[in-house]
Image (cartoon, rainbow, N blue to C red; front, side, top):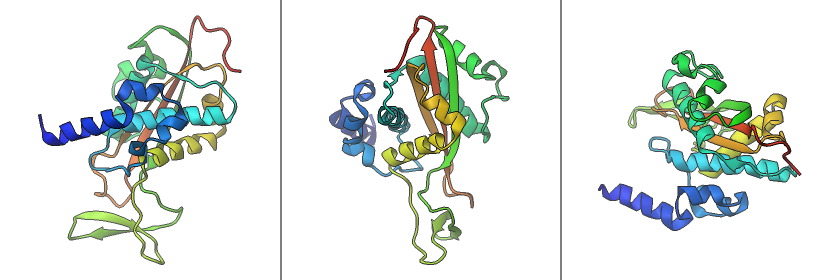
Length: 228
């Protein structure tokens, strides 16, 4: 096995003791882990870590709002992941997948995985992965053959978010949108699957690299009362 892969797996196990356990941590415990504070390497992002961070940032927002936290659900996660991957691959942002009609709607995507959920909702977003202010400049670095993003005045270069800060940034964007906020803070939802996939060729275009971010919420048919 490649030594780099061994190193990364070892670091993950040491820091969080595995992916499944990371979903069982509280948001406070997860964000206290040093691995969550690492700066994203956009050319080789740790997608699994980013997905966990988005899940934890979602529950952080619900906890702060006084709501019950959501349980991780593998079927909702698979549906979210496939849609994020499709949006990155085909460069679109929509709840409808016109590139694979069997995945056209959220219901189609979830029903491929399970029939347990009687209530569903989806939040999506396309958010840049470079931490810049609202106004900034882009220039092409001929030596590195890639774009850089910088302050027009000070020429300060802007870099990627950390895993934690990007997940929290995406959740804040949703909270600032009434419809997305209603989904995220709906006390009727009990389960969630979150996924993010990043630009496949970052820094190669003038526009900053970005992520396609997806939250899939669900309430099983048997659930009658949620929240506190």
